[in-house]
Image 1 (tube, rainbow, N blue to C red):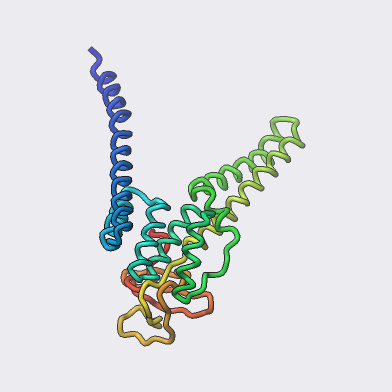
Image 2 (spheres, helix red, strand yellow; image 1 turned 180 degrees about the horizontal axis):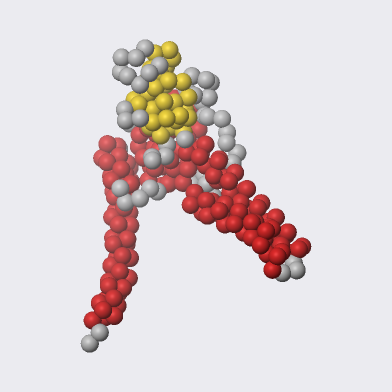
Amino acid sequence: MKIRPILLTLLCLAAVFTAPTSAATDRGEAERLFQTGNVYYGEGRFEEAREAFEQALAFGHSPAVHFNLGNTWFQKGDAGRAILHYMRAQALRPNDPDIAANLRFVREAAGVEAPPAQPLAAFAASLPRAAWTALALGGFWTAAFAFLVFPRIARAGLLSRLTGGLALAAALTALLALAADRAHTGLGVVLAPEASLRVAPTSGSPSEATARAGEVAVVRESGERFHNVRFPDGRSGFLTREEFEPVHRR
């Protein structure tokens, strides 16, 4: 009897039948926690709603969960965390009018301005980062083959130039999207009601400026305890991880 083929077949069957079941179980638990949070929110039990929504995020990030977390934090009087979760929801669903409306409303209520518009952010979010990377690499390799190799093995000058041009254009578009995605994912939100921008990453460092909850800054560098950030108006300095959190966790 050939044992190895049988074992291999059984392992393949086990993988086929157990992996989807596990994924389905996770989705079911996430949905249960999401609905539980909605019930708590409707009853005005906002702290319990927050706990349920955050537990749901352990099974995967969802624009609906982040959106409802934003609503919950706003009801709890925390504009900074509300804006943070609305921005996370918007990163996952860039063109949703409800997310944009709530984000605008909370910013107005908190008295903070939106960061400068990034026209390419929505375009970059239309595909995952891995897909843009694959398109850039594939485009450059295809262009190189079309311009350098293909004309040597076939009389297809026009076809090779056309193929190479299209591949190169696709690769450059992907690089542009990756650059826009990198700029967008480098943003973070101030969480503390009033935070001091320290001149060095130490607790006793002097401060030259302050920031308020809900303001958005670019993360220049992140350390174990501090983020080095810069705001659109030129303010810069160090904020602790309790005072500031990036929109995209790394």
